[in-house]
Amino acid sequence: MANASAQNRAVRCKLIDRKQLCFRPVDVEKLVGAGHRARAIWEFVGRLDLSRFYDSVEAVEGEAGRPAWDPQLLISVWVYAYGDGVNSAREIGQLCEYHPAYQWLTAMEVVNYHTLADFRVAHQSELDELFAQVLGVLSYHKLITLKRVMQDGTKIKAAAADKSFRRQATLQAHWERARQQVQALSEADAEELSARKVAARKRALVDKQRRLQAALQEIEELKKDQVQQSEEQKEKGKAKEPRASTTDSQARIMIGAKGAFGPAYNVQISTDAKAQIIVGMGISQCSSDAGELEAAVQRMEDNLKEKPEQMVVDGAYTTHNAIEAMAQKGIDLIGPVRETKKTSLDSLKRRGISAEFYPRAFSYDESTDSYTCPADKRLHFETEEKHNGWIKRRYRARASQCRACPFQAQCCPGSKKGRSVLRQQKSEIVLAFEAKMKTEEAVKIYKERAGVAETPNAWFKDKFGLRQFRLCGLVKVGMETLWACLTYNISQWTRMCWQAQ
Image 1: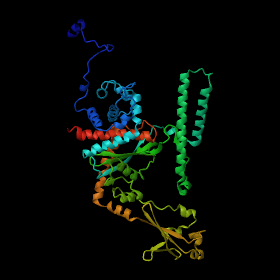
Image 2: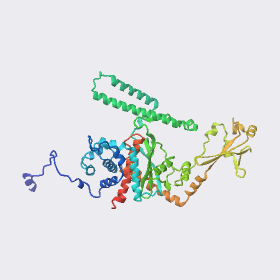
Image 3: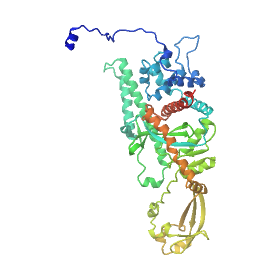
Image 4: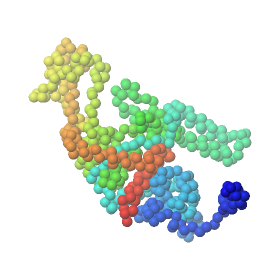
């Protein structure tokens, strides 16, 4: 009966009219709370010296022209956006229309996405200086000590597809075709295209030519690198014809997570262990982390005007060269000992040397510092050189003895000199490093590496959503990563300093 009576009544509910325009006063200050992250970012950026950013602003008082957006605002918006995992200028422009935090930052104004996109890549040197300033503020708050710095690298996908990589001949053919299409557009009136469409197509083709030209130039650089490869690598067939991407010519095919190959950049991050602050960042085109340690230390010296006391790295960094370089700089290096590669016997086989006369068949006498061959001939010390953390000592037999030896065809066929043997020993610095890494203290320090070094990597990919770059080229990719580093460091300051006030 109750349901029947309800159906007979005329129910009056508030009308939902979404077409009705509303005019309401908005208290911008109340859009975000007193402890909101947007306020912390605005306050932090306001403490920095942004004079170099203001120098590029063309609009000045007393002259015609539209006022420019304040660099403090644009920096704050980008830092806030990266912290929310937003790295698209177009998406930020949309958020400015309705999101309370962005509305508070912009005071209810909407920033055009072109302005945001241009600003992100228009101030390379200013951005580098800004990063150094942020480190200065964090040092003032005693969040950076450089007593212990963790180094790690992570692969981030490039804005290019696997199929965009082409060989030189293919690139040249595509470039010539694009050139002909541009010429045809300039000369053809028969297609009856509007001037706007012709201009748009021409811009697209010219941009395509530019990208193809960049890829061809990168091919030439790759060829120069191949010239430096050893003859042994070339004979093994490792020297393949180089390819470059038509989308991002400076990207490289790298092995990433779970063994997957794809276009990427190797992002090098140096993290101070005390408060897990990023103190250095670099972009590498090399898939391996070997050879990146010295450059990382130099970046820290450039940013903070001092070098770290201790570097903690994984096994990819602890090459003999790196061990000796850190020792020369007075930096304590902590990292696992790399396994020594076995000497290849391919060169001995190519020279026609029998297995019975391989170096392992020669006996060394420490008292006389000489070798004795299987035919009982003595090999005396000849030369010594130090290279890549190795001490290489060469021992050689007399040529007259080898010529008279019945085993010359098996031992040193066709050699005009006597048979030689190379004795390799690790340098004292390398041996001292290996001894140090056997101590309990060094092992304990190394166990702390993963928790510190991999934290920024996890923030970049999981919190900031930086699993793939939006920009192309080493310079722009570096700037995109630097924005993420700024966001990470300011977030650490907000967590440890600002919220505690």
